[in-house]
Length: 301
Image (cartoon, rainbow, N blue to C red; front, side):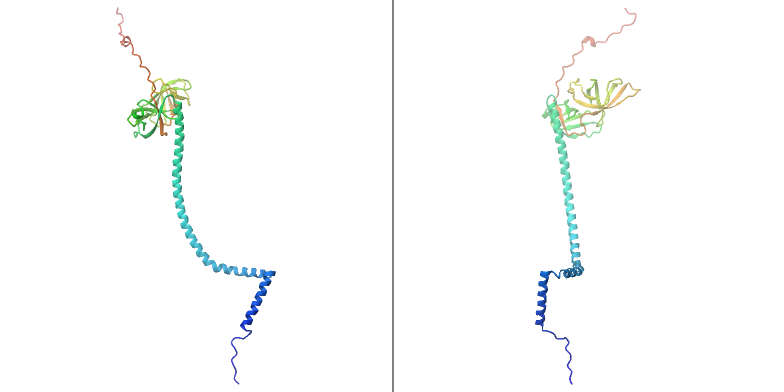
């Protein structure tokens, strides 16, 4: 009796029957879930179980994307920082220039106000350069003879006397500051009227009164103004403020150290005052006063 080999796969319903059955089950489950939401808990559970698998599947892609973004962002940040640094430097220069212009405009306003207060006319001049000799305190301004500047004219700023024109050229002029060691200004105390002479010391911010008696009425903080007795400086212009008085018992005079009222070492623009009217010349002494007296010997008749 011959035996046939059993089939490898058990045969069941036909494929069409299976398709129809599962399609009907799917429709019933979809309809029930849409109306009654009875698969919501099952769906959430399945999602929770599958979430780690999903994250593990997309992890390599996320890592590659983040690495690329890191390098792109790093390059962008370096470029942006470089650009911002350049803009900051440019803005800093502009800000400093703006601050300098603001300060210069404020000073020029004060200079114009001082020009209106001063009697007579004045010429505004700009400092071109300073003398390089360390033993002198001199400046060169951009106004000369063609602008009416002459030697002997007084130079001031918005706070006081700065110096005097000592040499005039066609287009430039030399100004000797009051701090020059060879410069002297006749002054008087605004508080007591005491007249004296103020000398430069050769230092940038220092003046001194020499040969002042120990008993002279002068105090720290006294304002010294031009006396006007020399015919060069108009009277009443601020020159300096007494900052220190030194007494020495072995010396008959007091040493008075003063601080200039004008900004002799910081301003860029100055005012050149018109030369005041000259005083009449001093009358000549009579001839009799000039003849020396003859001495007579004792006992002569």
